[in-house]
Length: 98
Image (cartoon, rainbow, N blue to C red):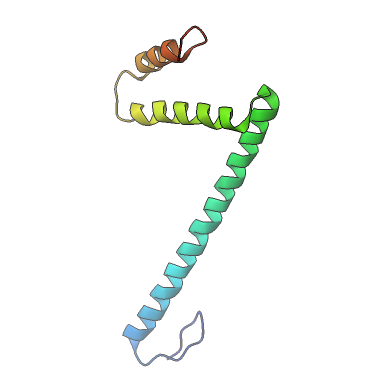
């Protein structure tokens, strides 16, 4: 018996399944790394655009992103999302002292 992916000789179905499972795991890991690379490139692009358009430093843009992400993460599963966003905006608006 031969693995259809790597052509390695296997003795039985159990060995074949183990070999195929290993290939699937390797492929899933490769795809996860590739997706992470794509997401990082997209984030770098967005950070660059935000810095250029607002004339802000990368640190300021990343800091703002962290604050907004924290807000959105805290809203997951809550019912009155709009009221919570309005309250957050009041606290973090241009007139606030934070």
